[in-house]
Amino acid sequence: MKRFLATLLLGATATAANANDSTAQLGAGGLVLSRSDVIEMAREELYLSKDAVRVDYVFRNRSDEDVAAIVAFPMPDIEASPYHNVSIPFDARDDFLGFEVVVNGEAVVPQLEQRAFAVGIDVTADLAGQRVPLFPYGGPAEKALAALPADILEDWLARGIVIIEEFDFGKGMQRVVTPFWRLTSTYWWRMTFPAGADVEVAHRYTPSVGSTVGVTFFSQNRLGGDALDEYRRRYCMDTGFENAVLKAAKASPDGYPRLYETRLSYVLTTGGNWASGTIGDFRLTIDKGDPKNIVSFCGTGVRKTGPTTFEMRATDFHPERDIEVLILEPYQVDPGSGG
Image (tube, rainbow, N blue to C red; front, side, top):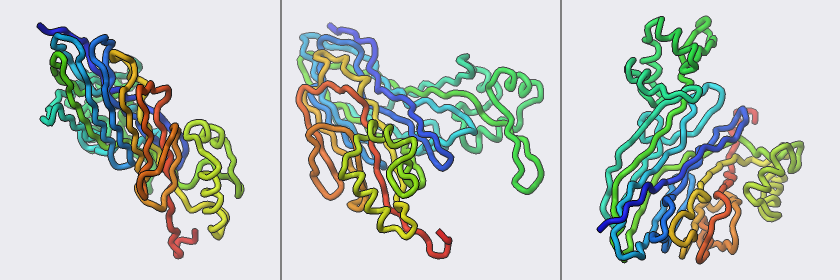
């Protein structure tokens, strides 16, 4: 006999960091189990770096019945807009995070469900009817929108599906039809949790990483600016981290730290719907990428485990906040650039 579990969700939300010289990150997350009193998360091992997110789980069905489930991974929404930049790892394909999943050592090929919305209304059929790709970025969408019939374009402008961008790059004023819809994308597959058994689930993807040229919370040769308090709250910047920034500023000829920001978000708080509501054995590894980089994130009992890695471990862990990682990377100024 099988018990049926509605859905497993791999949570993902969008986050933004707004600045003219910034690229915002999209925060994705991990497995979220619909409310269940028989499936528990025995273990989660989470690895985060600017190049890869790797999550390995052990789920345990502690009942005497099999549990059938649909498992889903909602990727972050894509808000098509010319007004802000968003980091998209693979911007020429629907699978823009390069998502992969393995269950008990066997690769799973999930199905992809995508919908497009404008002002909250589903416009998927409209786009498909004009052979416009749902993914709003890249050449195919631009080419298809440029070929829209005049009456369709007028209708889509009125409905907020597209907007007109006007600019002059030295060849006279140009008018470009630009996507303005929101794309939702969800991977899903079916699986069964056998009675009284453990199931290993692993997924991998390339994160959307935000970046800023320079240090947002440094102004007029000191720590400051509008972002300082927010960064201290979000990334738990301590005295050691801030002193490293001041040291970099002191070593710079212009008194400004030759560092640029890399930001990574991981949604952890959408979990907790499994049997105990906690993770039996939780291990988080943050990899800052290069020994010269400096990193800050919130965590309890964090210890350094290698030249670039930091680890936090907990038992019966209940996530109370998402993981926000700030990495500052040194850069060199070209002497011929005048900077």
